[in-house]
Length: 431
Ligand code: ZN
Ligand code: ZN
Ligand code: ZN
Image: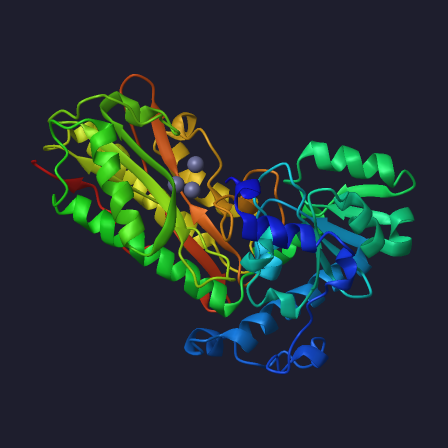
């Protein structure tokens, strides 16, 4: 983007450079809950999606998240959280930092107003969330770390939690300037909060899931031809449909045919799909949401066979199907994450496939495709209501074939709920 070339933008950026902290934008009267962010949380989250203009209620959700983060900061003795690029900032404020050399940083002190330090010419990208934070735009000749310091106040000598995705060029600059601060990762503060989805987040994940389910159904019914085409050609079709099904972007699309299905993260390539072989499809994206609201991720894996599968494959697939079912059924609130992994793994082990299940059972999912909690041996943390994660057992037999079945599941007090509902059977296609 050629910022310097646009006279209007340049003037605006220069104008914001004079005394940036005086150019604060604070909430207007329409934000009905601004004075009571710590108050009752009984506002129905379901109202948010019904309110199409959304201005007040969406900001309310972000205010509520800010208060949850503050409570976590207090319990972990953190004086301020500093967020830049990565998913924490959009989850907390609806605003995402551009991944570039100009610093964007939210300064959230444990007490006092949050301040968003950002390049002046990006101020128009802040939608609604100015209602929960002061904007501190900087001009091209300003030092943004000065603004971070002003927003931190006395916390420059305290314990600072910095976003896990923050570039080292910024972190090192901040560490040099605030030499007396102690540093920790913001993931330790925000990770557990982001892992527990509210009702609106679950609905966004469900919408994401039904979008990719539709594509899985099209593949299973043979509506997207595969035989004689390259993996990349088929992937291009799927990618286009992911965007058509309500996603702003595609995060990944694995098409792994024949022996390539034995590689869990196969690099989709130019192999031509043959008759009588398995194909693994693993794809997902991030949903398109109104401006000022973060998108949520989809992620599903389904298997096709281009012909009648040999009995050996059929048997292995049946064991995998049972393992996925067992993992799903084990995903109860209160069950340790590793025990869910074990419930699925032990069935594959019994079927003689344990050695070929090469990865953990699942990962959390939300604004990020992989986040807390991880369903893996060694993680004894019990599942909480609102945790959303994949259940994705697989087997991978080198140079031969493989398979995986993956759904996104939410743990609820009424038991696990699948957010992917296309058929989990091995689909036979002939074109
Ligand atoms: Zn993966
Ligand atoms: Zn996954
Ligand atoms: Zn996946």
